[in-house]
Length: 108
Image (cartoon, rainbow, N blue to C red; front, side, top):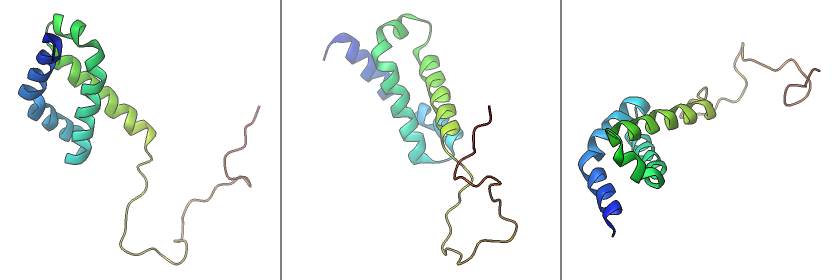
């Protein structure tokens, strides 16, 4: 492993637990927090030489975590909740689309 890779490995080893705690504060789930840290580290690796020369690489990685989490949060629909039993009929007052097609029709 070259010096750059060694420096990155040392950073990950030293700061991974702190990064996972921060990611848990964002996600509320340890598995999602681990995924978030790994994704931020993968995005940081190609720019590591430039990041390392700046003030503090941990700031960059944490910012990458926040940006990644925000992106995940925007893409995922959070209205669904798992239940033990699936209801047989639609609950009263459930929202139904007003348009006849499956997706909203475009108005120009």
